[in-house]
Length: 295
View 1 (cartoon, one colour):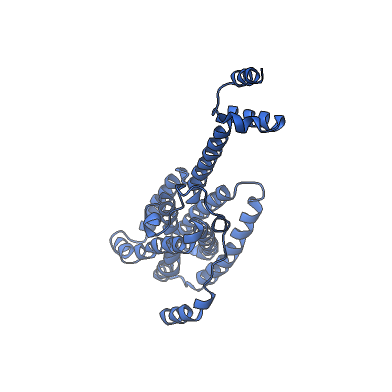
View 2 (cartoon, one colour):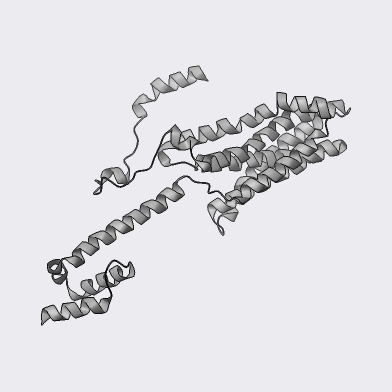
């Protein structure tokens, strides 16, 4: 992978040209206007990124459990893991396709971020129930294996979709890589730490682990942290734009010469707009002053 990345670095350098953006084509009339932040410091300090990474972590942990510990558990229970492995892989294919189709259908009637949040959390919770069924009913491991594969891979698909659009446009790649990096720690938790718990408490420790994790996921998801870093930035930017526009119009109103040079329809429309934003005094005072000036 490292060698191929070096090849790509040198082979693709001539094609490393970003398309011009609308904000770059037009000169910024107000240089003091705040710009979107970027860089690793912004990503690390974002609650949005940590929220997504934390919940996504449990999915990566579950994948390692299903691909490693379940087979050891079935072998220890004198049950062949072959049937589980086959149904798990088939369920993974079905879950990946189904999650994308469900999202496309749901977003036609509901908000995109809300739909992705509900489906991602639902898949995460259902995969824990399915995995718990494997350790509780080993003889039905093929059925629960299909369900676990479907919900694990479907959850990965949805969380990757959320992670790819969580950051600003200029740092989306870094944001997605950072979320995947933090979520991969779930696989490490399913290694030696989990092996120690199994050696002390036995295989039934999985039921308690899944129960605790299920409660944590529901509590964290109920906080309803937004799934995009730029939601707050866009709102603030729009407010700044509105304030700047109102300030320009106020300057025109304060200048009697510029105001009187406008035609009647434009002048009345501007007065209504400025009065609605509370930038000028009531209309009766302005209209009375205008009539006195005409006299």
